[in-house]
Length: 295
Image 1 (cartoon, rainbow, N blue to C red):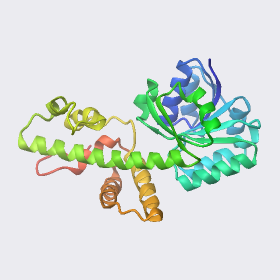
Image 2: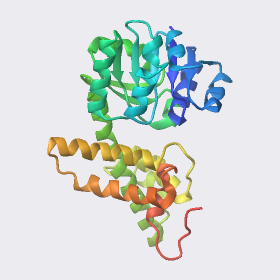
Image 3: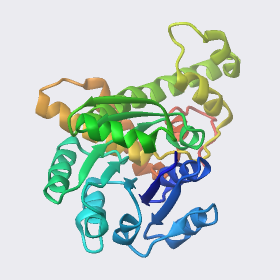
Image 4: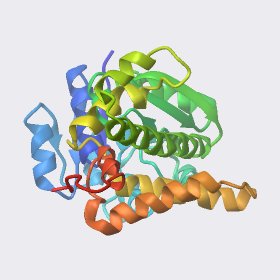
């Protein structure tokens, strides 16, 4: 079965999600303020919408992939937003990574307008979206989460209902803590291997299956070695997520010294002009004498 879906937000992640939904036979109406991003998906079979309201009016489901809670709110409840066009009972699937508290309020506001809300942030990035292997952590009413799977099954191989509204976003923050620390650990280990004269490109194979193995080790150590900084994500997005985790830690009285340091390093990289670069560019933090600088 295929579905009729509105996609609001066609950035790097939204484009990958939209491409996969089209490739699996779904009907897709797209709205983004950047006409070029919309045109890329239209060339693959989507239809362009003049507003989020128009896209929602054509669709049974609405997927949002945006950069902040404020942008999500404007896209859904602002002028010509999703809420103006969506039919009663429409499920809004927010795949953005935003604050859990803001998510709970968005969900309540949606219910007040007769709409349903599922927060379903992701892990795996654009590469996994393109092959339908995202990991999704969902928050919302059980029936809504189950219904949303009719759409999300096309892009995800792991889909877990974590609890009520906001639980998916909380889980994503935990994911980002683990990823942020993991990226820095692997980058640091890569630099040690390079400086000590070990063939760092062989380390992922040598450690495969051991306790130090991880998806980040397997994917990113080769990229760190070769300085492969092709963009599949952004360092400044990690800053946003780590800040969110630290905000949550303050409200829960959780001590997170390693996460605080990790966030500060990512802020330093952003201040140095690398915020728009892929997470692989954290390797630029680990430079000593006679090492080439980022260009």
